[in-house]
Image (cartoon, rainbow, N blue to C red):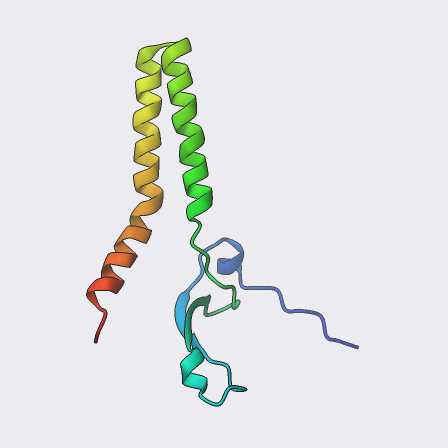
Length: 110
């Protein structure tokens, strides 16, 4: 009988993962280093990190559409406030990803 699976730590259940970059290779190949792929995984629960870009962009697109409809139908001031909020939300949600890409680009080659 298979033992019961261990529950992930509380910090992982709350979404506060500790991400590490791990190099994966295929040992069955003649040259395993040729198939090396870098993957970002949680140190505690092993969950693979995804970009999350699609969800963030979909939420911002919905907010932009709602602000345009509100601008035309209800009130231009309320539509402008919603538009500023949508753009600020995009910056807030995509900021860490942008900084990570720039930092990775600057540290390349070391």
